[in-house]
Length: 131
Image (cartoon, rainbow, N blue to C red):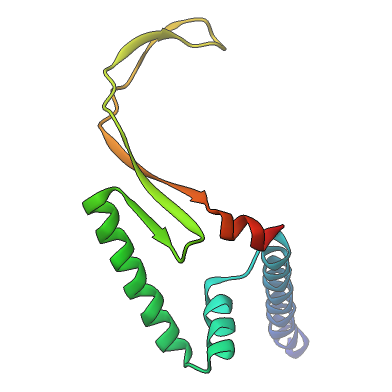
């Protein structure tokens, strides 16, 4: 009986180790899959400029606030001479009839409301920096 009581915590410990290993694997896959995280970018900028990470975050947030306000007002905004953002307005579409290409049965495509999207176009400074 005492042996069984000892085994339950062991199983729980093995399960916890397995969970930690799975989390570590997920973290490694996430890092291998793409670029830097937002926190890593803030930290890098803070290291290069000598500012604190919170100050860098506040600066970037306020810059994005100015960017979004200008996009709403004029429809375009240039970020540091490297990226040109343009506001593109998509008109609303009416509901229409069509045919499902897989089943060949008729169906109705729903109407979509008008929307706005942002297009980012690289400028010469950005292209030269990458090439």
